[in-house]
Amino acid sequence: MITDKKINCAIENANENFDINPDEWCETAKTLFVRLMSQDEVSSGCCLSDVDFDEIFFDITFTNSVETHELNRTYRDKDYPADIITFALFADDEEAMVLEGVVTLGDIIIALDKVAEMAKEENKTFEWELKFLIAHGILHLLGFDHQTEEEYNFVVKHQIEAIEIDKV
Image (cartoon, rainbow, N blue to C red; front, side):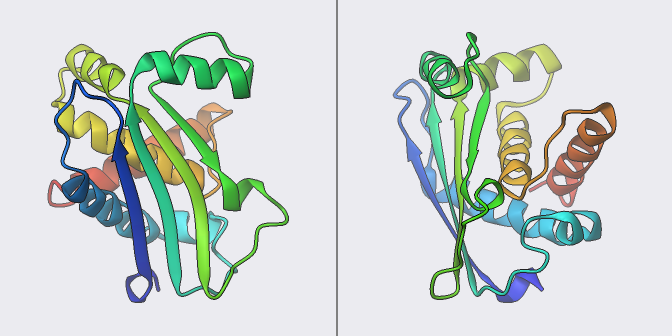
């Protein structure tokens, strides 16, 4: 059960245009992680389902769309700014190991200017949209993708469920 595991999240705000409290958002990210892993479809289908571990670690970097555009070009051969980019170390690496009981899931990079833009377009708050993307990134780190409509619906369903339980 995930509630007996230690969850570590490191957040860096590299975007000077947004006043983000890394400690508060780290707690939000950990809460979203627990809520996602508490959903049977997620916990049974993720990269951790058969892994023995005591501790989880993941990073989140808040940046801007100029940076995500460069990351997209460099690592994904895509020429556009992304709202979110994930580097799923554990789920994507067949050689990934659990070292001393610790799983390092990977990195989530979020463009805060895109979050603000999307929140306005979707008529959501900035906070809701940021939680939505953090949950999205966590699902990617857990090995979920959205190449098909069915996969997309699965991911979005679980993001919304994790956010809207008691309104994190």
